[in-house]
Image 1: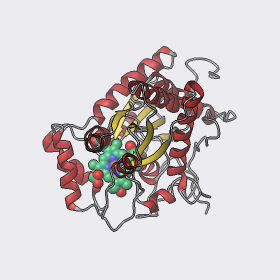
Image 2 (image 1 turned 135 degrees about the horizontal axis):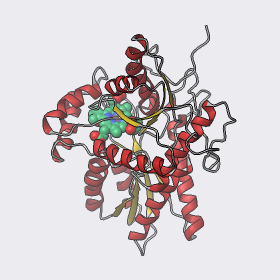
Image 3 (image 1 turned 180 degrees about the vertical axis):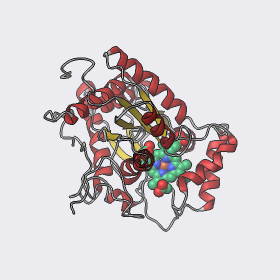
Length: 374
Ligand SMILES: CC1=C(CCC(=O)O)c2cc3nc(cc4[nH]c(cc5[nH]c(cc1n2)c(C)c5CCC(=O)O)c(CCC(=O)O)c4C)C(CCC(=O)O)=C3C
Ligand SMILES: [Fe+2]
């Protein structure tokens, strides 16, 4: 690691902040959570009832907050192990601990320069800018009250070797569990409205947008590294889960269940499902993949192994700390030396104007981005 003196590696930051999505922890919290997530977003009522059913099937408790608690513990241990003992806070977009309350606490505790890390690895409005808007909403009352608090953010990190290595290890283990077969690899991520996908990332963009491009390159890299290790070239695809929105609105396809049916029809007998779009076992993973897609696989007679998510894998946790060190070096004015997979894109430390635009409310303010001149 290039951090010069331990203990100063994260200067100028005096606090770290994990920013996540949030989730209900009891049955009576499910509907308020769903209304909070979808407020004003045109999600049909039937979809909400359906998704409420997913949460209620798990006792009304989403796995996501517990996973944030585990990640916080793992990050604290990693920071302490490297002599980087900065306080680490946690705030959510949709449930307690609310980001706004955490930001106020950070200010009360006397911190003035905070580095945020989101539990979301890829560019897109939902996975990138929306968190920057949440940071703005949390920060502006603090700033209005006269506290000079500056918030920066670690870049989108899906193409960082730490995230990729954790996912590679998980795919390797899942393939090994299917010992005598060459499974088809199904890399899965959250579907998005195609309009959001095509505008993901900084302009200029490819036709598919950075969300899809980044996932493709992570899927390719994992498949390639596996081939280097084992000599086996697995066929692979990028597929989607958790489509929402009205049926009239186009979302990214193919859905994992549809793709499994095609593969089974073509004679494929086993699949590894690798949720590279999720940093840990969110409800989408435990319901849409472990429950729904597994049922589909059983109906189709496909053997299915689900690869673990990055979770608290040591490569992922230490990678996040490396990313924080990298961001701190940039904040100190040192030359950027982003660590990135072969042929990948390092992502941007500060999102440029027009990056992952908010198509619904174009003028909405966001932190951690360049401001349009004039
Ligand atoms: C790209 C992306 C990520 C990955 C990046 C990131 O992690 O942020 C993500 C994560 C998550 N999404 C989650 C839950 C939900 N997402 C919904 C709705 C939507 N997601 C969208 C996109 C994404 N979502 C979109 C475009 C919508 C349509 C409404 C809108 O335009 O905003 C809805 C409404 C019901 C439904 O329609 O499904 C729910 C309940 C949870 C919590 C899971 C848990 O509890 O473990 C997590 C981590
Ligand atoms: Fe979502």
